[in-house]
Length: 542
Image (cartoon, rainbow, N blue to C red; front, side, top):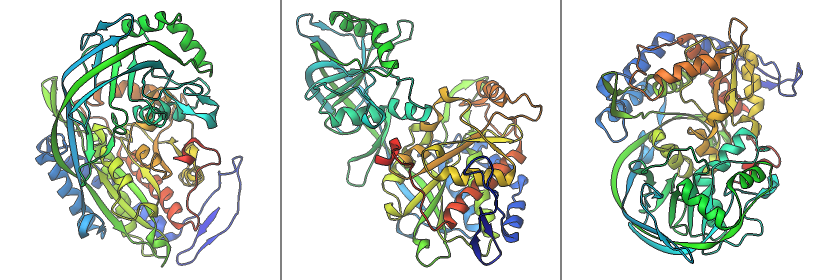
C-alpha cells in the first residue's frame, strides 16, 4: 500500500487483502479534494460540443475534426496543460493514406490451373507502398499464421515458406487467453510472422461454408511518415510480403481436398493446439494496382510536468481518440455519426483528468501526457504513429492508460482492465479500483476481442505496457448482467448516427471512470519503478 501525504509521499504497506495486489491506499487531502471536483456538468458539456451536428462526425481531415482539435486545445490550455506536440505546438501531424485496389488478376497455377474471379473467388487488399505488384509463388497452408514458440504453438514449425504464398484462417488455439487470441489473430501479427519466415504473400481463407464472401470494402488506411515510408498499417507490414488477400470457401476447400485433407479436421487439430501446416501442390499468380489519396490529420499532445528532477523526463500517457466516422449511410433519416459515446466521452474523461491535475500543487514524479488521437476508427492509426514516433523520446514513455467508449450508460460498480493482466499495471488497477470501491473482473465479453480494437494496443505492440478500462458485469440489482444491457444498447447506438447527446448517459459513471483512470496513472507516475511486463508474457518480447 502507498500512503500519500500532502507534501511527502512515503510508501507504507498497511493491508493485504486476498489478492497480492488488492492493497488499500490513502490519498492526500489535496488529491481527494481535486478528485471530488470532477464536474459532471462539464463532462456533459464536453461531450455535447464534440458530438454536435456542426462537427459532422469528426472525420479525420475534415473541418469538423479541426473544430474538435481547436476545442480540446482550448480546454487543455485553460487547465494549465502545456503543448507537447511537434516544434513546440499542440499538434503532431499524421498523414493518412487511403489506398484502393484498382485492376486485379489472379489465377491458380500448376496441374489444376484455373483463372479466378475477383469478388467471387478472391479479393486483394490494396498496397499502400507499391502502386503496381506482380508475383507468383507456390502455396502453403500455415494454419492460423501464428508463430508463438514461447506459448507452445508455431504454425511455421517445420514448414518452409520462403518465396511462397501462405494460406491462413482466422482463429487461435483454445488454450490461448482472449487477449493473446486477439493479438495473434490480428492481421498485422499474421503479416509479421509471414515476413519473418520468408513468405511473399498472405491469403486469409474463408473456412466456413455459410460465411458470406463478396467484394472487399472500399479503401484501406495507413500512415505515411515524413520520409514517405509506411509507418503503420493494419494491412501492410513490409515490402517483403507483397500481397494480402482473401480466398472464398470453395477455392480454399478445393485446395485442401486436393491435398487429401478436410477443413473440419484441420480446424479441430489446430483448435486443440496442434499445428496442421503443409505445402500445397499448387501455386498462385497475382497482379494488381493500388491508387492513393492522402489527407492530413493531427494528434493533440499536451504535457503536465512532473516534480522529480530526473523522473519528470519519463511519461505516463492518458489517451483517447478524437475522431469518429463523419458523415455516412443514413439511419432513420440521420447521416451524421456524432460519436457521443465513441469517443467524445473518452475525450471528456481525459480533459477531466487534466482538470484534476490542475487542482494539485504537488505533481507526481513523472510527467503526464494527454494525447487525443486521430484515426482510431481507421485502424488505430494515430495511436500507432504516436507510439512508434512520439513527440517525446520513445524510451521515455512508461505506460498508457487509454479511454475509448467507456459506455457510461449505467452506474459503474465493477471494471475490467483490458491488457493489465500482461504487466505490473494490474497492481495499480487493483489499488485504484479498491480505493473507489470497484470490483475488478475478467473481460465479460472476450469474443468482442476489445483488447486489440482500440488505441492501447498500439502502445502494447511498441513495447509499452498499456490498458483500457471497460465496464464489468456488476449491477445494482445483483443480477450482474450489465453486459446484456450493453449488448442491447450497442445494437441501437454503436457506430450509428443515434450515438448523440440525446442517448442514454450516466454522467456520474463518467466521473468515476475519470477518477479511476487518474488514480491509475498517478500511481504509475509516482512509483520509482517503471511498469514491467510479466515474466514470459507474450508482449515482453515485442
